[in-house]
Length: 168
Image 1: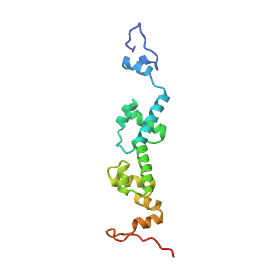
Image 2 (image 1 turned 90 degrees about the vertical axis):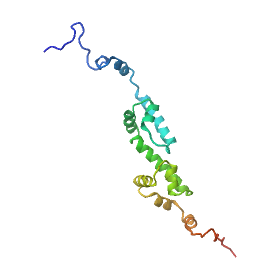
Image 3 (image 1 turned 135 degrees about the vertical axis):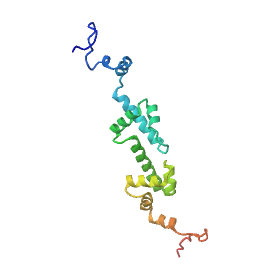
Image 4 (image 1 turned 180 degrees about the vertical axis):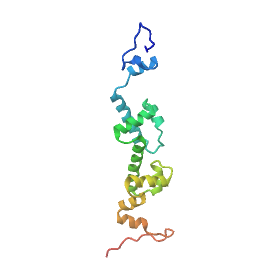
């Protein structure tokens, strides 16, 4: 059986823009972006995640700002950086949480909320998955013993100030 096309116009060879379903799609294919354009956009997305790590992740909004479809952004991000945008954001949050815990002036809950988690349980679970120990254990591991003694010393109603040792 013979295909139905006008005798004056045989089909275009495969691989050309004229073999797509809609004529406007050929123009889109002809304007295909260079891979370095995608890399520049991915770097901007990564930099934004680094800056705004405490904000909720919205891949759709990131993709709109990068002028890319969300699925394409996620796939290309994983190819470029080895993890999804979500995993990258969680890693950044845990890194910042570790730094805040090492400072020693915030509680575990305060640190979790400061780096963007809305639940202490979720923060603790994700921290434990990525670090290998719960945030409280990490805090105790990094706290010098001299500081730990002062921080954990019970003080009743601020009645018993710590006396300075007297050297005679």
